Length: 231
Image 1 (cartoon, rainbow, N blue to C red):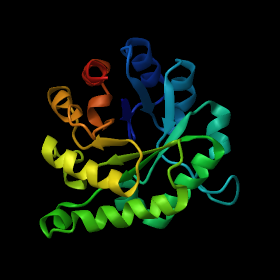
Image 2 (cartoon, rainbow, N blue to C red):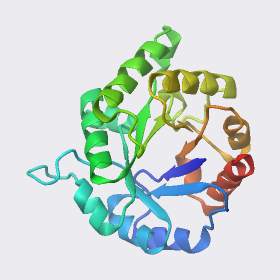
Image 3 (cartoon, rainbow, N blue to C red):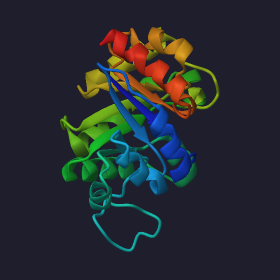
């Protein structure tokens, strides 16, 4: 069971130090935090497992604003998130670039959390499985069943909205994703302490990618405890 906290564009080094001084992950669950780039070193120094929020597919080059896998390894990061819906929505990520980032990270020895998920319009028009198939197969073609690869199902309509897929919907989507690519699948989409246990109880939900609720040590610890109790 893996619980990953995606801090997005929150917490500089000082706030990261304060969080890490307070947060204590429970036994029996793998916990990852993904702070902004400027806070990676502080997070790594705490002894927690740290992922970046993205990674470039090239090991070096003229790619202003990007960070490579060797750079992440040098600062002590253990992995990276790729293809988060906000990266797709705001920064032009495509299935191809997500797959390239995932491949580069895994080949370099970084853990990968590769995100997939449908929009509200796509779900309402009955295209959920089609969208997931296209996204997952792009990652599969690039990375295969690499042991460092984990997928995250994040229905776009549930991210930052307070809306959460029902456990039944999450289970259905996770089972479908695993039928395409047999790797662990996390659920991401407004995961909170009061719904974590119910979501994590589903047989094909292998953990959670947590957004806002990962920013406070108490709420993140509560979600981690819910995972620990299922492990």
